[in-house]
Image 1 (tube, one colour):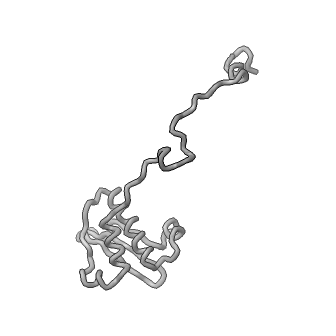
Image 2 (cartoon, one colour):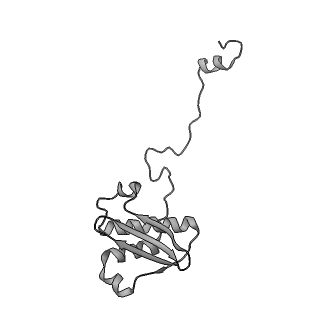
Length: 129
């Protein structure tokens, strides 16, 4: 399987291709959910983020490895291709657990709910209307 980055004037496409079956996975800056998050659809940051998206989709599909479909000299000349292959190799960053240590608005103890007289009256089926 080979990973390919195709850059165009207005967008970037990335593909994982199988030698027999053709394109298996793809990601593009033309996708609305991706393009909304990018400042520019053709810069180095866009190539890096397309690499991250494609790495995440590979992980979800169970693809654990692929080889670059671009020669090493061409990758070294292009900042976008280098960023793409670096992101594809690194994969999705590990998520940080949400806790009281990294969020000051998060309480580490759940408070017990103390019922009022109205709550107790609502529980009684004879009093309910």
